[in-house]
Amino acid sequence: MATAVEVVSVSKTFRLFQEKYTSLKEKAIHFGKVPHEVFPALTDISFEVEQGVTLGLLGHNGSGKSTLLKCIAGILTPSQGEIRIRGRIAAMLELGAGFHPDLSGRANIYLNAALMGLSRKEVDARFDDIVEFSELGGFIENQVKFYSSGMYARLGFAVAVNMDPDILLVDEVLAVGDANFQLKCLAKIREFQEEGRTIIFVSHSPDLVRAVCSTAFVLDHGRLVGQGPTAEAVALLQKFQLSGSGLNHDPSTEDHRLEAAISRDIHLDALFVNGVDADRGVELQAMSQVELAIVIEDVASLAGACHLEVLVYNAAGVALIRAHTREMDMEPILVRGTVEAVVQFGSLPLAVGSYSMQVNLYHPQSGMMIESRRWDNAIMIVGGQKGVGGIIAAEASVFVKEVSSRNFL
Image 1 (cartoon, rainbow, N blue to C red):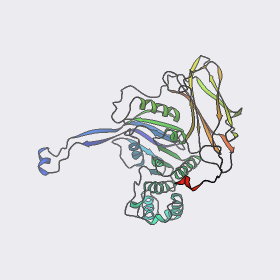
Image 2 (image 1 turned 90 degrees about the horizontal axis):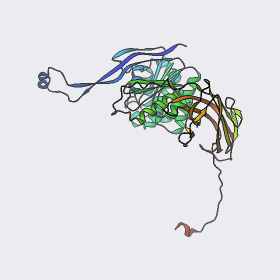
Image 3 (image 1 turned 45 degrees about the vertical axis):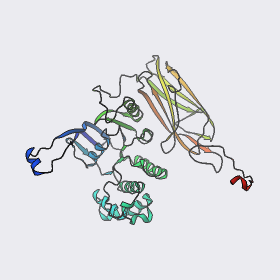
Image 4 (image 1 turned 60 degrees about the vertical axis):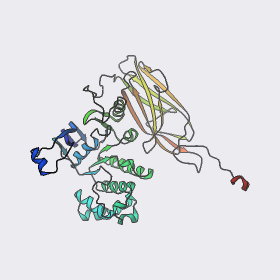
């Protein structure tokens, strides 16, 4: 498969000035030199993103995620190294980035599109789609300085996804806007994935990264410290967070790359939902009882052990149900040959809709990920009480009774 983005030994440094000399006398005394510190925002980053891959970038605040995305977008120039891009890029990096506050939403659409290399004729052909996606209606003629943060996000995302990009860069913009707009953006991202476009996605929500990305990288203090399947990357990020990783944390010189030494002989073979293979999907009524049969195999035929985690996601990528054997104070599951772990849920409180399931296996001592597998649309809830909806299912009754007026005094 062709490479869409190639990052080769990229480093980026910034100067941090403690004081600033403004007068001619001060500049003459110090020979025009202003004391400063060099801050390494990125250090020797190298990776490739194949065409059609959705890559997640994870890390604490200040880890270098946004700086890396800006370098890929061409907004910042790396201090060292090289970035090679194959295809048209559309970037949604900061709220309102590239918008002129004194121009209307209409004028800013043409301005942003021109910056992305589109002609006025091309924008004319897409203008109605942009406005429709943003749902701004008559507000499109107002100056954007009067827009709310959600309106900024709507307009920016609408412009970016309608520029027909080969590569889409998204940095935390889904954190603003209402739930309906976030679902709309996620649906558009999934449409891009089906069309084989490349997406680089930054979010502080592990659930959202799990739902959207097939693979993820972890950054810590400007260094690439781990990469792999999304579930493994999220586990590594959580390990860093537990160790106090952050802007004021002094990172160890220890190599924190994903531990290949952990047994990879334990594998997830299959998942059955009420006796039906999850690959085929199973239809259930709301409030149904569910039994999961998880087939785990130790291909080395040794007595391995692991902890088990099961997650159920809705279409928006939100984990609605989670069960973890370690947190249930259970002993690790002993795996010799092939075993079947059975997880039983009571009445499953899911509303009508489609749900995905993910099963993770963890090393009992280190807590590192051994194996992870996801089954999209494993469960379809097809029935429930009429007139009752939302994220979860619930029995509801409505009745009316007469009350005297004194009850309201």
